[in-house]
Amino acid sequence: MLLFLIGSFFGKFDLLQERILKLESNLSTKADWVISTGNLGVWPDPMKAGRSIKKHGGAGDFPRYYLNSTSFLRPTLFVAGKHEDHTWLDLKRSRQEMILLPNLHWLVNGYSTVLRGATESISIVGLGKVFSPIVFNSPDCKFTEGKYLRSEVERACSQGPMDLVLAHQGPIGAQFNAIKSNSEGLNKITFATRPKLFVHGSYNVSKQYAAPQTRVESISLANFEILPIEWDGRRFQYDQPLIS
Image (cartoon, rainbow, N blue to C red; front, side, top):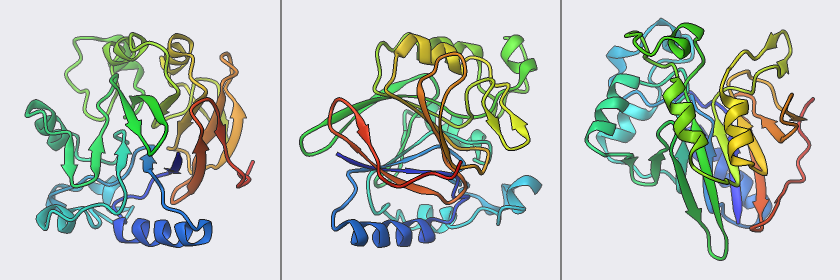
């Protein structure tokens, strides 16, 4: 089962499709699934993109894709990053509409799914968005947009054994250049679900490492990074070296 793990793409979907086709041409095979670590760039209304979104190029290609119901090139699963329209996503969730476009599937925080290839399947639990100590430790906080909740971590922990944890941020204590993650709860998910691999984006750093505390194999993906990885039903294999 061939998976393409991707970092933040900030709505540059045309570029993503071009990169996928080029990589598949080099590999002489097609990806079964593309798995996004967030900041995919889900912004249906470009007028609602705030300042932090505009510095990454605004709403990008999503408004055009959504207007025309354009299919993603390959089946794609994503967790929400910081730079998505969370209000719109919450509306979609209330309507049970987690397939946002043909071939584009949103994995809601704390839930799991099983992706199927020709011969193998893989179980994935997701926790997107970013950590805020105020939101995480105050269940009555009203300003939760773009922040993950303690209840979502607890829900993720209840999903049972998983093959892969897909998150936007890295586990607490992990170092990414000058940034050290303080994202509480992610290690609890890892301890509870015992995954073979933890994958995230967020820091514009590509590296493979053992997570602090849990020691689970982890991969951080930089912006616009695509990492092909094989899953044989028991273990992950990838040949492309990651920058340390």
